[in-house]
Image (tube, rainbow, N blue to C red):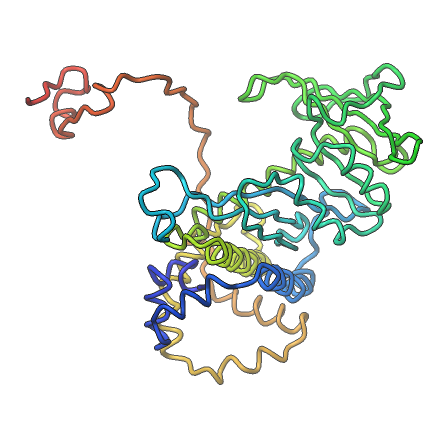
Amino acid sequence: MSLVVLGLRPSLHAAAQRHRLPVSVPLYKKVNRTEPAVLRALVRGAYARLAPVRRAMEQADAVCEGMTVRIVDGNDLPASEKRLRALRGFRGAAMPGQSLVLYDPDLDLVADVLPWEDAHDHERSLLKHLLPRVEPGHLWVADRGFSTRAIFQAFAAHEAFLLVREHERNPAPTEEHPRRKVGRIETGMVFEQPVSIPDGAGGALRLRRIEIELDTPTDDGDTIIRLLTNVPADRKGATTLARLYRTRWRIECLFGRLESVLESEVRSLGSPRGALLGFCVALVAYDVLALLQVAVRTAHPVCEQKPISSFYIAAELREYYGGMKAALPEEVWAPYESQTPKQLARTLVKMARNVDPAILLKHPRGPKPRRKKGYAPGSEVRRQVATSRVLAAGTVDYVKQDV
């Protein structure tokens, strides 16, 4: 499966053929019976092994000094091909599953995942399965889908903290005092207001509402962003938490890189467990690529000013992996298994010094202008033109369409 998600083989069948595995129906049956608990253990085990190596490479910049931060978000797998007999003849979208991903922004690693086969269950109902991972003093950041009374009460019971964007209906807090201006961040003015919700035991749970009056409206037209948190004011100020919430986009970028850099969405795997296996293996591959990025950045100080691209690292891997496997026997890799995290970190940085960082640097560009497509008549959508005629005429409008 790792060969598939890395783009080294076009399908699971081709990857099995490459390793001379018995390519038959039982192989796919085994894939389609992979238990979600095994997939979760795979991702958690990879994080447990890679996190100490990451810490040994360089000092990671904490997104919130003095607090351990985790970002949680849901990810829906896209519609799969309808290869399963029960789906043949169905013209709609077949959704193979979803997952809740727990991301460590300090190390840029996926710390945990909850694979879920039912794509119609709401992500907030799945969070209870991740709550045992909540440790006292940890701060989790989430979007408005997790803004409920029950979730805040659960975090308070674990003596942990939560920072979410307030939903317009949930948890409907009671205002204790008028809001007051507390400062400004890069995107707007920050206000703070004490609020409360029932604690589930007849008392009140004290929260803080943080409002950001934006200088520029969001793409949805919002001019104010409201956040709710149970972090005490003496632990972190409102402006600090407002800036912290802006880091939530990192997990959205993670999902984007999974889709663009890795083949995390294997649409030919219509079985929920098979599709979730592909996604979870892609999460492990992402953590490995992120570790390689840090190794290159540590070996070449020039990368501190010009970030490197995981896309180009994956491209280099695809180009050289086959030749490396053929040239180096398996016993060459055995000594690395027994290395400590510090030893492995030094080994990776030493190897990274042989890399030319110039071929891995990102090439940022300005943002694309957003244009709303709107409605288009069917005659325009189905219209066909010859590109050579469009280029000769300079515009589509003057190109005649052959009948």
